[in-house]
Image 1 (cartoon, one colour):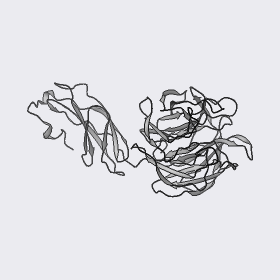
Image 2 (cartoon, one colour; image 1 turned 90 degrees about the horizontal axis):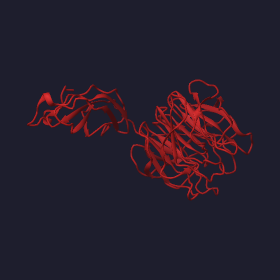
Image 3 (cartoon, one colour; image 1 turned 180 degrees about the vertical axis):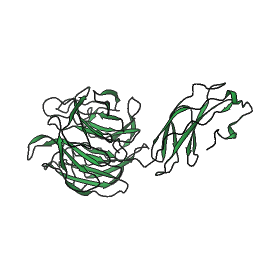
Image 4 (cartoon, rainbow, N blue to C red; image 1 turned 135 degrees about the vertical axis):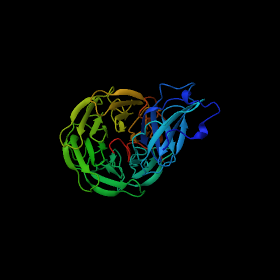
Amino acid sequence: MPLRPPAGFISANYDPLKNPDAPTGVSATGGDASASVSFTAPANVGGSAITAYYAVSNPSQITVSGTSSPINVTGLSNGTAYTFQVWALNSFGPGPFSAASGSVTPAFQRGLFGGGDVSGGGSRQNAITYISISSTGNSVFFGNLTVGRYSLTACASSTRAIFAGGEDGTVFKNVIDYVTIASTGNATTFGTLTSNGRADLGGASNETRGLFFAGYNAQTGPGFVNVIDYITIASTGNATDFGDTTSTVAGLAACASSTRAVYAGGYQGSSPFTAIGYVTIASTGNATSFGNLGTGVTFVSSCSNSTRGLFAGGWTSTGYTSGTSSIQYITIASTGNSVSFGNLTAARGQLAACSSPTRAVFAGGTETSSGSAVQTMDYITIASTGNAVNFGNLTTAIKYLAGTSNCHGGV
């Protein structure tokens, strides 16, 4: 790549002594056929204010302009590795290219939502729907679970999505299903959980292991449990005992980086839990205390990128009459209490979530104001605190569903 941008940007006022310096600290995050390129503006802007920045890909020299960091570069090829350089332009001409970013490889970013309950009157769903996380819009039918159920959980690697546990209104299930994320179609049986079937459990994963946290079985006992199961996602088979959560709990949610899985919230007695716990995914053993949520919640949703975990929505009472729109976040690598992030578009519990490196999407649930299942999907930009905005709608209004993606923080 040349040291200076194309001559076509040189104007009649061109003066190399008044051009801006190169931006610094260029980094990129891969998306779906795209990349978000971040940088620091140069301290020396030259003889006049900078009017635009240009991010250039290598290979292909795809060039996109913007007025500030980050710049979203589209039109890339999934599966191809790219680096990026950025340069600045003022009225005296273009400045030099920055140093190149690290390499990123764009990939399709698919979120899946499975199972759930439409009305609470026995309409247990086996449908799986999907979204492209990088593009707002409504969900699309993917296929069906092996059995319709609600209050299940989900996790995923970059290639497989796993759905585990739940109940069908009569029987608590120990079934684990999987789908190949890139190929729409019905789920296949993966194996079973270690204990009797259970619902209201949490799920999280990295690229190799899926973990299932605690839960509840009122049918065959022992009721609330503290068991943690794990599976090797690439190899079908029954789950294995990993260790125990810090207390017996159900209605919790979990998320992960590539090394840690973190769970939070839930219920057992009269008040929802505030406790946050974590495990090191590669090492079996009992969970350790991480910190506390700002507010105790049950039937909360969770997802993450590689650094931040988010917990959104839920019920602040075990009577399921008082919901919250609050979104809280943690830094997964650093133990401590959660911090307020913003709010969902409406207070609701029994929702699901999925995420990419840049976006978190929260879907479905029971809205507090009406008590009805909703179709709503909200999203946030994970790096920037603030309130959620509308993403689109699920194919049907549904609650007690599970969500995951092929591009969350653990993969």
